[in-house]
Picture 1 (cartoon, rainbow, N blue to C red):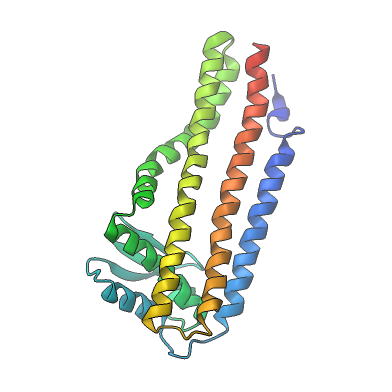
Picture 2: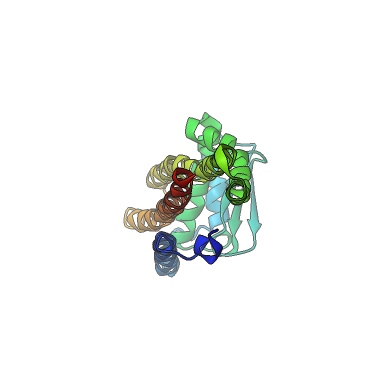
Length: 236
């Protein structure tokens, strides 16, 4: 019925726009990190030591810090209580590395105080993953079935895909809040000087833009699917 038009049609421009936005955000965060990764902190503290210091100062003793492979793959797992720092962060004493490490500690602090959006995001993760996996199969199956049954299955597919967008929306306050906590900790904890804190702020702002870009890209993909298959529903 749709053939290649399912993937390449006038609405595909929405996917392209989303890809361009995501690529631009990714390039910006990498260039910003690289810029401030060249500036070594005056206190000469590594990302790993900074994370350990912050966790100790915040009274968090049940979170482990480990190194992982990759570049800017830093993350905090609230289920395992593990804070993972990438190679570009763990052993570096740069302002950028300390800023990223502090951001991940911000997530650990959120977990410790029971920050509601973090709990909500954790609860949505399995639903969003399943929804993303089932969305296109459901839509394609719905296209093969005529009548109301096909339309219902298509709508289920659209609903499943929308969960990925909901996840992206919930992620935004979690990430921005973690950065705010990190900057407060860095300002008050003495890990960075007053001149270095604004540099770390630029790194974290650039990183936050990648989440905004991901949300926009997902919204544009959802909009495209609604335009394509909403029209299909009306024709049926």
